[in-house]
Image 1 (spheres, rainbow, N blue to C red):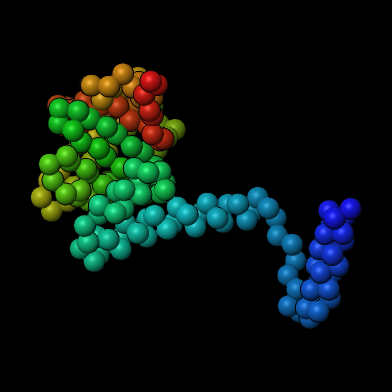
Image 2: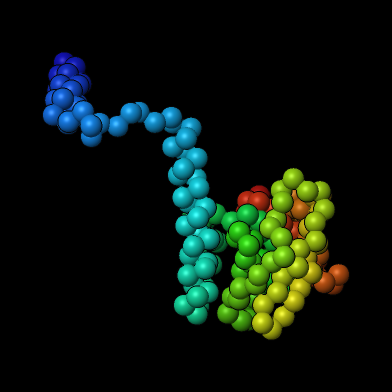
Length: 172
């Protein structure tokens, strides 16, 4: 009985709100799929904006890196290497390079990661260093864990790793 009364009051309240809003202020209902796309675009733009802001202000990207590692921010592609322990986070037209012994660094890239390509070569560069990263669809490994990644990643024909569009975790 209480539930019925609640819903009745809810409907009456919504009706009263709609009637009290002038007709010119009332908005037409929007398409749900359009709203979802707008939210996804907003989230994607937000992380790219954060990367740009951190770079422009010369801030340390550790906080941004923590967001990426905790899956609180989206990335386009992730690569993991061991010996040395490095991680790459592709976010739009930038890469965050995380080394275990130094602060994370930003790199510009000559092309964005394309999930539909079976093999792609992306050049990373900043004021100090340039890297060539080859990404191939197919089993990849970080060289230490038992994780099998959906992509094989090679940096400068020397360092081998694995990567993907989502974090891959070991099954314990």
